[in-house]
Length: 82
Image (tube, rainbow, N blue to C red; front, side, top):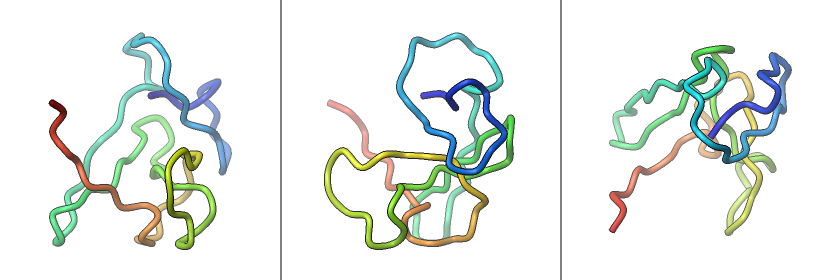
């Protein structure tokens, strides 16, 4: 995952890409009291945000970066892969 073009703007997209280790691919996981996580970009301080506000549900919803608000579309559950 990376912030496209290392953008510092709201709504910058977060596509998958090959690992480069650059700042736009570094993130901090912040655990909530619920056990879920916010994912914060180290380069911008913005959080991952599922585009479409709190009504955004379903598969293949775009992920962007946006100032953190604690809204449910900015909180993620980490599931161990198989």
